[in-house]
Image (tube, rainbow over all chains, first blue to last red; front, side):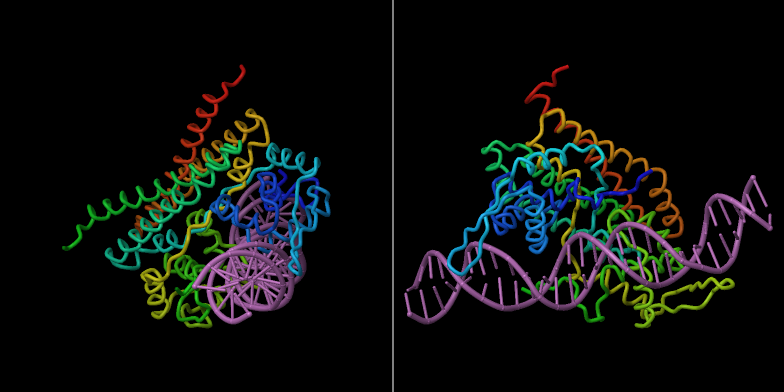
Length: 195
Length: 195
DNA sequence: CAAAGCATGTAAATAGTTACATGATTTA
DNA sequence: TAAATCATGTAACTATTTACATGCTTTG
């Protein structure tokens, strides 16, 4: 009953390390490019902060999974990275690894408020649901405007799964918006809104 | 364009503080009871680790939002808490606060692997999708066996929103499982599995 | 060429997790 | 009464975020 999610020995990549490695495999070269590309793709199911990106680049290079070369412009440092053969192999192993799974973690302040909405009146609760629906509608717009086009570019370059996953994100928010509509109707049925 | 998510001044509760406060409002008395109840309810959209619970209890009591009394048994310490009037008011303000919203954060190692699945062959990718579907099916079983019954108990005691939110969780995993089926079919259409 | 914005990276602070320590209570 | 399990809490560690520092590049 081994409960270890991600062993700290470096034979297996951590998820964050793999995310950085994978972004390079998809064509991002510098830490900055990784950050930008991640904002348009993995961001919605695996956020990466700047320090994590640079820390992982350092560690991955030390392990020989990526090779960096200096591309500084003047005083401004810059490093460009590519995968080594070991890096490609490590990424494939990580994707395949049947032991390498884990729970989906969700963290949503709006659902949290809704959970406790019995302490306020129905109008306030309905306001929360409206807020939650609006948030998903804005997310849908972001997917259509930014994330799906970026995934389409990856698809044109031969990588199809970013598109599948982006589509998942879009449909997830459609599901949430539709759910908000349904609870709101349930609430209205329970206690009709006084017009 | 104030980008501050949760101001550190204590006129507004942090989400985690509110989660603890809310669990007490719903009837949990000790840190331990909060932890147990949280595992059966808010866990799936707002996880709470033990140290966070006890840290928040201390802070909430210092602010006068909860009142604690000693209920030790022998050498073993134990404290039972109830909301003060200020605590009730703070919880209502937090639930209502229109500025108190934030992004839904998702973190899913399985989606992350799927995102990079172009580096492996189709059978390996299909295995990942199968893994993801199975995970949601197990989650569905947990909802049916534990989370929905707990929410029903809360409903019997007069709190209906836990039930709505639990239902959201269940339907979310139904959505995910159905999505897995659909991508798998898309993949099979693209490259029929060699039987 | 000055100002604005883009590109690159890091330090410091915060939040969250893992693992454990230990006393009470139940059960064999 | 010994062993197992339940209940309660904490110390130490790790991950993540916020905010910033700074140098290039473009544009008015």
